[in-house]
Length: 298
Image (cartoon, rainbow, N blue to C red; front, side, top):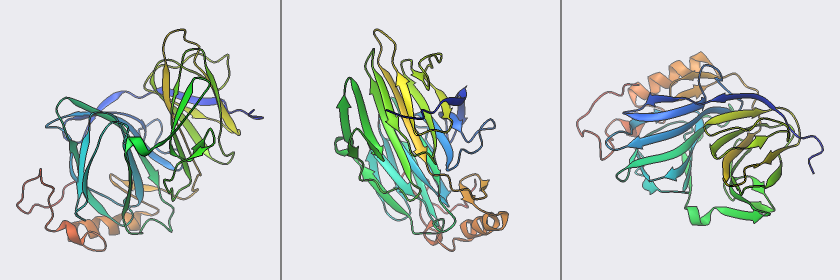
């Protein structure tokens, strides 16, 4: 039992907006109402159909976590790394000092997924880029009393994810059958939120009003969260994400997230001049981009 359950302190609907080349995203973190929820920079629920997508673009200073809900996306970067992630698959990319990559639809129809940006501490911002990828079949999953948890990062129901999180993070994909309830511990010092994907859920206290899809709920202090699916017929699916706050200054310029304006200026210089981590961007284009040289525009 959670001795000090968290209540919902803020709740709002993520409305659709256009992003990338013809993609539609519902952004809940990283918009004007919620610029930053330490250590989380962005949460997008994205929907993209070919030929739209996210063509070649740079990152520095944080991690991107991509988790597919429908369809598939092919990613490619200037290190020669290429692959496709499909439904239930995970890509945990540490951009570190610099990466340029593309993320494009891999099949016909609409591809849907979640992308979470997690900030890196000042000591980790300039580390070498790396990937952790996990096929859906390898993601730890546990079921108890009508509640199924896919453990993308962290632990739940006695199972633990092998994903290494530089900024300590939990990321759970939870499905609750009608009439079930859940109590999930969350480290007390962490920030945490719930984002509803389908169905309706009662979150925080049993007397709270139910929450429908595309809403984010920021949780207040406490050592866990309680959730009820009071529907008699519909399943509830949501993600529960928590992370240890970094407590550091954040200066963001598009796809670059550093601690000072001076570091951002340096990053723009590095990217434009193909230096200090961006050397390979000079001649690289993803296979779905034009092959002639062009300057990066952001």
